[in-house]
Length: 349
Image (tube, rainbow, N blue to C red):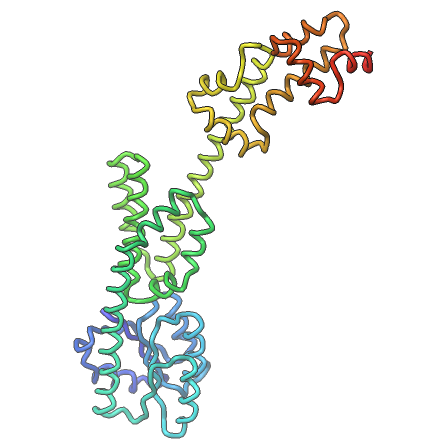
């Protein structure tokens, strides 16, 4: 149904128009009434209608100011202005705010027919827009949303929720279809990442109930946005916690085994049951350091400390630092420090 808000400070004018309109002709229903622009905006905040029919001359906030605010805050809402003869030019100014039409008072049967023809046009346009939305969604938007979720791309999600497409659709008669689709795709994502099917079914039903129970459009929008951000935030937190635990284990294992000549990064990857390429990329991403360079740095640091103690030969220090080949150790040490092991020892002792 297309929801229509009637705005006029003359209660009898509101009642008269309400009774004269053939609501079924344009699949409409009376969303509510307001006595001025301020009341209309309060109503908009709670339950935005599809169409507003408003008088121009009203106390507190007139129809022109109301048209300006609607144009800025809810561009999908259509507006028809009613004007007395003396306010004709005033009504013409409202056209810059995309007012659909202005109807001159008094409101006769002929004028009501004119309004009804506009409302029928609005309804048909809404239906076409809804169908375009469903077609567009089925041809690619689902994939885009699932890609955002899989990539945990918060920036892309922000862009979607700020888009004129999302905002205008959620403030139109297509709001409920869009909301339900978004909930369905959120749980389709859960299914793809192997969340328990029973949990998915129960959670989705609960989410549907919460969406339908949301009293107004803004509450429905808030529910959808919060649901998506909660998922991404939760996934990012889990990912962060896993990453921190993963890297902590790797560092601890290296710290315990780097001095063993049998140790290398392939051994580390095997102990963590991951591929060497995955381990290397995760370590680089988390620490900014190359994995091999990290191990080498620990070995070189340990070798420098040992070289300060003349009880150990260069060959022994090489083995104690994780290098069976003393010549390779000496070459690597010079590359990293600028000194041979013997030169470094002489400098420090």
